[in-house]
Amino acid sequence: MKNKKPITYFFSGIIVISLVVVTIQSNYLNKKQDKTTEANSYLGSFSNPEVAYTECKAILLEVSKAINTGTKEQ
Image (cartoon, rainbow, N blue to C red; front, side, top):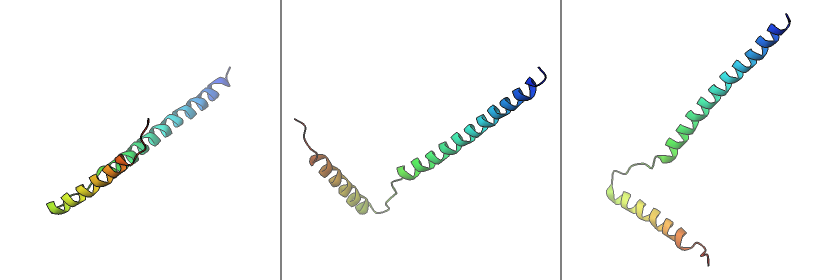
């Protein structure tokens, strides 16, 4: 029965270390995902309204083409 305590401490230590590692990894992945989301959601800003209008028109034209050229299901 004396050998049972060191084994218990050993496995408890492994479990605690594993939980710490998983927590650190999940925090790192969440921060990395937030940065990626911020980078993808930034659309920029235009100081000239004419440039903004031209860019929006070009984007909407491409979206319209993509929608209209899709295959129709019958």
